[in-house]
Length: 108
Ligand code: FES
Image (cartoon, rainbow, N blue to C red; front, side, top):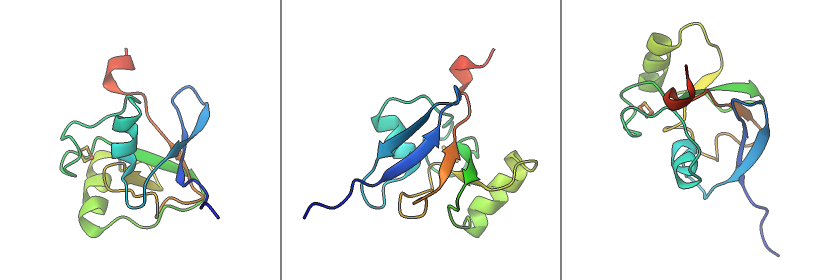
């Protein structure tokens, strides 16, 4: 029996929701890149710039690691329930809805 397709449920900056299929342990950032969905990623997924954060608006995506929590507290202290897309794996995000922010090319 084939296993169910796993994926991230995201809310795009337009408000539309999509499920993005992902392999086990694949990060949200890698999935966004593979599917050509624009997103913030200044350091290219090295978990040092803090720009790729997404907000968990439904469900639970697990707690960030201490170094990730430090970046999130610095770059988005006003936001609760957020994670770095380059650290968040599909295993952690099962059942959660993740709000993506408009990337720099679309911000005026
Ligand atoms: S892309 Fe820089 S912290 Fe995730």
